[in-house]
Image (cartoon, rainbow, N blue to C red; front, side):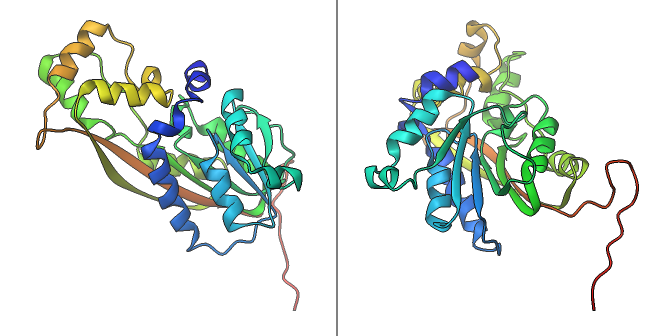
Length: 271
């Protein structure tokens, strides 16, 4: 996935329709949240739509863009207006894995991640690391792909009796449990189905290649199996429907109730 994302930096924007739409819907959810962050971070920023939205909403905040693919960070830098760079207002960059962030504990007020965390085989280490870098009272907001993603291709695989299938993703209830295990308070989860349509199988495959997801999204079965699956993909109104289950989540970092040595923390409110 890392090499695919690095190669896709130049073509990502022309095919990232789904990421732009989910980012827009995530941003709308921020309208319901009262927060005035001093430091914001886009984790898995790709070419930077998310960090630019956070800059627009919170112009006084220090923006940080993180991705494991350096070409993606170069694209973020290239998108920054020249005057923004000259004034020192462009996003700071960090090439990093979300499971080992080069950030101090409690240094971020708002962590944002759009359609990235589902690529991890186990997101729990990432949730633990995001909890570490958030300050008490900080917010994590994210979107991930859910288990009904590309259900049409799963049906086609079953129809032709192929063992090759699209990658399987976690259910939102399991994700919510993982957030609680990582220490987050009262996670809010919801989901929706977004369906894109394609005129041809080739168009679908080209889009996944352009965003660097084709290898990770489609099981690495033999190409002959995938030819059979794609041929069995049922059309609706002359188009090929591709459904993506989008899981949205947000959770806050609450004040700790247990000290590092295991002792309970008791707080007394002043009168």
